[in-house]
Length: 251
Ligand SMILES: [Zn+2]
Image (cartoon, rainbow, N blue to C red):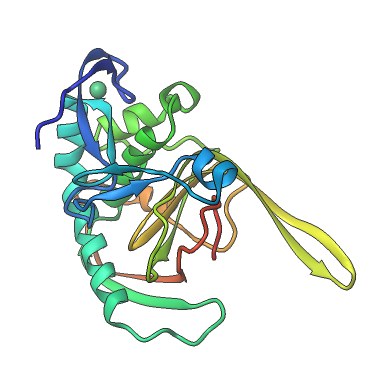
């Protein structure tokens, strides 16, 4: 499919030029089918008959220059696809745990955790406009594959995301307050400022130092080197069915 390539500023390096279409997540990670995109207005204002807009050939946007898109895709993309395929197949073939909330455990072999994390960071440049200005340290983090320093107030989380008709959520910036009922009182027990990307098999969250309770933190993957493999790595995560349009929801 041919797409007209617009001119604009690359979300990572900031250079102006022809932008290339970045699939978010990568095309080979179950992101090549047509989807219907609903805006905030569709979901929360119009509600009854949301119109939506058909996006052909997978979700993404003209957000990165060709150099940034190609280099990061080359360094990290294959790793993300590998994890996504393994987890998708696993979730597709398993029986639900019967736990509340549902939880799944998978062990991945011979994987590069730093590459996976860096691809996640690249996604958030596309999801959250202005990220290079608010978190400048993330620019060298993805443009230098060996760089390992993440900003201290930046944390990354993952859950499994798998249901019959999961909503593909992209939230540039949102707040989530978790409230618990104690007796007759409703008490706020945690709050998060987050950016979110959900696409089976993963729900990915970037949060500030408030964190994101209820998900697996993957910020620690930055302790691996670019070429360092984990012989085996176990992910024990909640399985979010993805029925809600709300950011950070576990429904
Ligand atoms: Zn660029």
